[in-house]
Figure 1 (tube, rainbow, N blue to C red):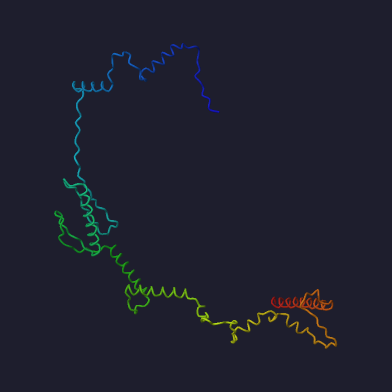
Figure 2: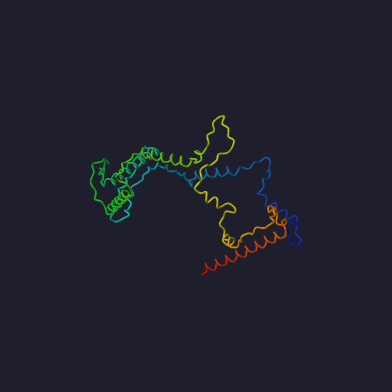
Length: 308
């Protein structure tokens, strides 16, 4: 539901005709009502204001305001002298004042300021590099000569630092007796090392073991190795039944010499244990249990000897 807007409360009985007359009187000056007399037309308010201004000027109550024409002010920049950062440092150069000449356009003036500023910066760098001072005529601004400047403490400290840096660079050279190489020779040497490294990475060691088969050649079997490899003993010991286990020593002691029996029976032991005869099966189970007991005993003795 929307918000309920309370209506105006009427206090007592009011005359509707009086209310209508009051409302029309309030809206009389706010609406574009038709003229009261159709044959007459009222003067517009803007025209009335113009007539009043003319009458005020004629009577002398109002005088014409004369606007002063603004002259094109000439641009002037520069002339500020900055204080040195250190009391014993060399004072900065006096910054020239750039004034726009009469009849000189703003574009040409800014071009002249840019040109003179670059010349001023280059001159300051020249003075700092060679520790000299450029003497100019204060009136014409032409160069009259150069004069030597005494180095300040800050400049001396900076020179010592630069000298120390150069000494460190010289110490870094590992072999001073080696011949100096030009930039092109260094570039060729670097490229040569790079190619050698790429060749070593891409070399396949199995390329030399490839067998070159000629056209029409027939092979009936794989090649046979007639040379015994050095690691043949190690390979043979890793085969099943060839390993030297812990129980071999126990089994050799427990083995008894077999007595020749009158009747030898051939028993097939390649099948499963349940297919063997009952006596043979009991003998295998007893042998297995004896081996497990012996293995546990040996392991206990070894752990006891390690603990002591």
